[in-house]
Image 1 (cartoon, rainbow, N blue to C red):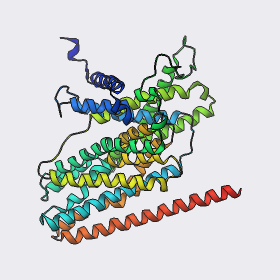
Image 2: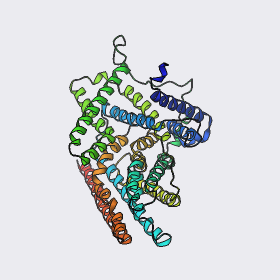
Image 3: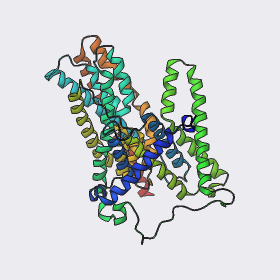
Length: 466
């Protein structure tokens, strides 16, 4: 028996493909001026290369999407562990609240656009159009393609033809908006900040020249005769990984006693493991500082580790986009997806400078990536605007993501309301009622926005007086 028959190469092949993509992207950026002008991270270009070469498009490589998604998920958790372990540079308070409000306002817009489109489609073209179609943008863009597909499958049993694939298609459209539309948004944000005007040739090429002075990547904190400093930092990350797993595992066992609702809550917990890991890492850093061991962990080395993780994470996240478009409703999905993506871009562009007190560009990118894709796409867009991840935008988005499920709970409870209208043969009445509900919820968020702005102004006045 050959050794390769019982030693799995799946994880190594994922790493190898991602490495090849990153190397190819680095070469192409150096050679092609239009890639340099776009200021896209090499990781995003690498992901697009792998996506095009994958069996979904050209069929030249065969990436295992299950293993790819697993690697991306754990890399995402690792990135936020590193964020939590680093010495804190910002206070995360108002930024989380403003990001949370921006995310929930975006959810509301998705619902309103979906309902308005469905009402117009029923009135103009298809009187028998299934009313729950209106909720799929909220589920596919705002949450996840798998969640949207599960809802669609449930609605298939009640007359929604190809509902599962339709929900999946909205998830695909959301991811494409996250990365392709996000690339346009990043270009506009960087131009607004004036980043292009000061870019050096090294920044354009993505490589330092032979003559340039090389920056220091980090400082050794151990004697290499005992242990490599990089190893000690990775060991600490591994400890936090283990603590995160143990906590989630034990909570899952407790929740399992509650039946189906407990299993659902357990699934949500595991999907937001990055937020749990971030919290544990913050606490671990407090313990390290309390024990006066902070000098053993270097910010520069942590930055290099997180940077490498983000590069592989972004490349993998883009390469794993599921390219599916349902045949039965491709026109409706295409038109509504274009409306939703453009509407979200306009919304975050308008509200971010007015809602966020600082780092508006970075938080604009974070919110857009989160409400069109997931936390991985949010991190990718933040990285494009803030290459060194020095702002709190990514951490604020990670904290706001699970909280948005709580603040947006009324939205998700109301998802099946149009279905009730279909069962009672009163679809228009229930769609109009849904439109009114979501508009009212949006009005409450608007009031919360004004409250945040007023409190900020009051704080500024008090600071000036003091």
